Image (tube, rainbow, N blue to C red):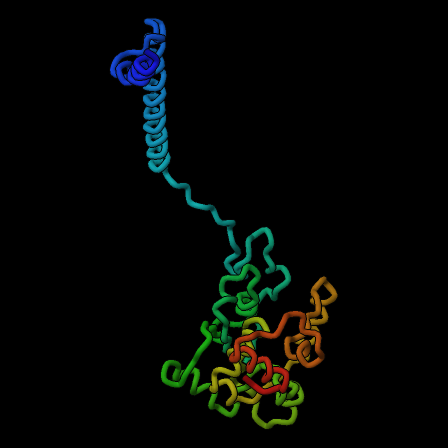
Length: 260
């Protein structure tokens, strides 16, 4: 009799699986059916929220864009009117016989405190010309090439061969008709000077007022920054030497004072 009881026991779960559980009551079934209603309501609420967010985003895109208002600028010095520098400039343009040809690095054009408009405001319009760029050639710039080849053209650059402008004028029988000025940081000016052979044709000169300007800046908070050449030669360069052979070769040329 015991084996038959065991067989019925093993077969009972198979028979019960096809029908409802005897332990379930009508209340359990009602509770199970009721749980599906909040889930469906939650899904509906999420869908409604997504539609509302989409409609809100569409409404934002349809709003008119307000253009940014620029501060009114002075028409003479190109500075904002609240910080206009015209009271410190000459009332009338200075009468000069020399033409100023300014080579401006493109990065200087967008700077807030630009010195070229200040210089242009102090001299007649026909005496000051600004040319923006980094590379110049005889084919693309025939006018600049002609100016650089003139014997009475000087370039303001503190190179090793530069002479003091005041002493040059006293000793030279030819008065300079054009002075080329490179506008940019020291590294930008050096790059423009050495990578454009046209600028090595005129006589290099240096102005004493440049030293006075540097002294004025130092007295009003400017910091002394040693050149990369000086730091390399004196073992003060704070960064590790580059692993790239090309950059390493450039560092070696700087240490040996080779023009690159």
